[in-house]
Amino acid sequence: MSHFAAAVVRSSDRWAATELDLAGAADVEDVADRLRDVDPDADLSLLFVEAEDAYLVILRLDQGEDLRVFGSDSAFAEESRIGSLLLGDIEEPALEIDAVAAEDDADGAATPADPDVDPVGDPELLADLKVPAAKLLELCSREGLLPSDVTSEVCGVLGCVDEVDELRAA
Image 1 (cartoon, helix red, strand yellow):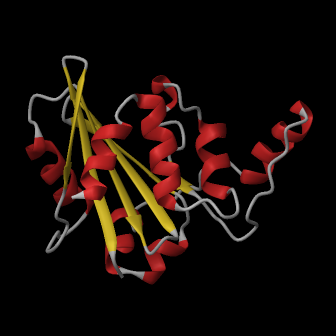
Image 2 (cartoon, rainbow, N blue to C red; image 1 turned 180 degrees about the vertical axis):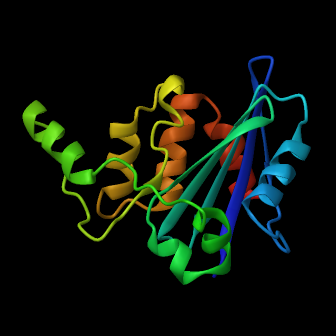
Image 3 (cartoon, rainbow, N blue to C red; image 1 turned 30 degrees about the vertical axis):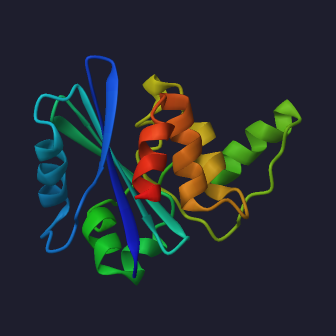
């Protein structure tokens, strides 16, 4: 299964991005160590892993500590080694997409959700960065939106979309 892994790190209010090689990683902690090595002094480190135009996993480290993980769909853990490596230890489901859709309905801005999507992990991992759980879940469940589109939307909010776009173009 092909994938793209973009490490995005922030130090002193500057973002930098680099592609991260996940080949040979033993477990999610090994991936976290590789993310730490990108910039050991980073205030914030994020890893966006996109696979097969179907799955997105986001990892977050604050000052190299407190690993948090979100996956757009639990099926990724069953369908690939990388998915299993990143999401295999996550037992708790993310907030229910149906609940998010109900909130959208109440606001009058309902978005059709893919009923087959089963997000897992911590959907709040970007809430302090102006991407609340409801928005992340809505993006991941929106039919027709690719993982690369979700990454671009999130990175646009964070202010690092140019850095990630440069990685894609390389």
